[in-house]
Length: 143
Image (cartoon, rainbow, N blue to C red; front, side, top):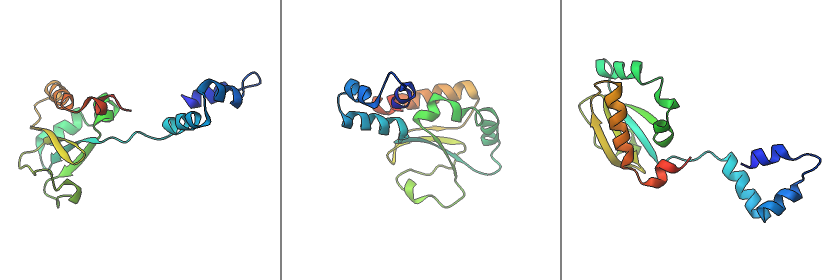
């Protein structure tokens, strides 16, 4: 928002005008930091996978290139976890799974929802939508 405002500043407008419209230097500064600071996401989607998993490979071919561009990825960025590798310390509160792929929605280190398997793109998007609906509204509307 501030970036757009500053782009409009020319001979007719000034920083004083912006300060007058926003009401204070503090508000102007907070607008600047809000516009330039990336939003931290408390939620993430873990994909538990392993080498040689045919359904994981299918997911990577059908969904992998698309997911980062979606609203779902904005809400819950994807983290790939190979279940045959040592379990990451930051995931100690998340239960391992033997089935791959398994998708685990995590918020602040706590499991919110889990889906085992991948049967195709339509079913995946439906299930991910249901998982995300379990997040508090503040997570889904931030960003």
